[in-house]
Length: 70
Image (cartoon, rainbow, N blue to C red; front, side, top):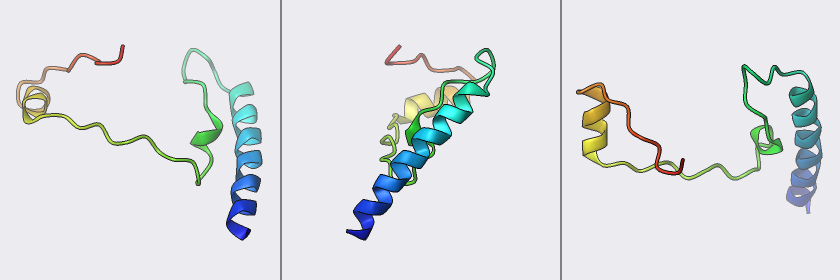
Protein backbone atom coordinates (compact mmCIF):
# COMPACT_ATOMS: atom_id res chain seq x y z
CA UNK A 1 0.00 0.00 0.00
CA UNK A 2 2.91 2.32 0.67
CA UNK A 3 4.15 1.96 -2.90
CA UNK A 4 0.71 2.83 -4.28
CA UNK A 5 0.47 5.87 -2.04
CA UNK A 6 3.91 7.08 -3.11
CA UNK A 7 3.03 6.63 -6.78
CA UNK A 8 -0.20 8.56 -6.28
CA UNK A 9 1.51 11.39 -4.41
CA UNK A 10 4.28 11.63 -7.02
CA UNK A 11 1.77 11.72 -9.88
CA UNK A 12 0.03 14.70 -8.27
CA UNK A 13 3.31 16.48 -7.51
CA UNK A 14 4.65 15.77 -11.01
CA UNK A 15 1.49 17.20 -12.60
CA UNK A 16 1.85 20.39 -10.58
CA UNK A 17 5.55 20.69 -11.40
CA UNK A 18 4.81 20.26 -15.12
CA UNK A 19 2.13 22.97 -15.01
CA UNK A 20 4.47 25.39 -13.21
CA UNK A 21 7.38 24.63 -15.53
CA UNK A 22 5.24 25.00 -18.67
CA UNK A 23 3.80 28.35 -17.59
CA UNK A 24 7.31 29.71 -16.99
CA UNK A 25 9.07 28.35 -20.08
CA UNK A 26 9.87 30.10 -23.33
CA UNK A 27 8.03 28.16 -26.07
CA UNK A 28 10.63 29.14 -28.65
CA UNK A 29 13.54 27.79 -26.61
CA UNK A 30 12.26 24.65 -24.92
CA UNK A 31 9.84 21.81 -25.39
CA UNK A 32 6.63 21.24 -23.47
CA UNK A 33 7.28 19.25 -20.31
CA UNK A 34 5.12 16.31 -19.29
CA UNK A 35 4.40 15.09 -15.76
CA UNK A 36 6.42 11.98 -16.60
CA UNK A 37 9.51 14.21 -16.89
CA UNK A 38 9.25 14.86 -13.14
CA UNK A 39 7.82 11.56 -11.88
CA UNK A 40 10.48 9.09 -10.67
CA UNK A 41 7.97 6.23 -10.95
CA UNK A 42 7.08 6.86 -14.59
CA UNK A 43 8.33 4.33 -17.08
CA UNK A 44 11.09 5.57 -19.31
CA UNK A 45 11.11 4.96 -23.02
CA UNK A 46 12.98 1.95 -24.26
CA UNK A 47 16.48 2.68 -25.51
CA UNK A 48 16.77 3.09 -29.25
CA UNK A 49 18.59 0.21 -30.88
CA UNK A 50 20.64 0.99 -33.98
CA UNK A 51 22.92 -1.02 -36.18
CA UNK A 52 26.65 -0.67 -36.49
CA UNK A 53 26.24 1.08 -39.87
CA UNK A 54 24.39 3.97 -38.20
CA UNK A 55 27.11 4.32 -35.57
CA UNK A 56 29.75 4.30 -38.32
CA UNK A 57 27.88 7.00 -40.24
CA UNK A 58 27.60 9.24 -37.19
CA UNK A 59 30.98 8.82 -35.50
CA UNK A 60 33.29 8.11 -38.43
CA UNK A 61 31.66 9.78 -41.45
CA UNK A 62 30.02 12.62 -39.47
CA UNK A 63 26.60 12.11 -41.11
CA UNK A 64 23.45 12.62 -39.09
CA UNK A 65 20.82 9.87 -39.45
CA UNK A 66 17.30 10.69 -40.63
CA UNK A 67 14.51 10.38 -38.04
CA UNK A 68 12.54 7.20 -38.53
CA UNK A 69 9.32 8.33 -36.82
CA UNK A 70 9.11 11.84 -38.31
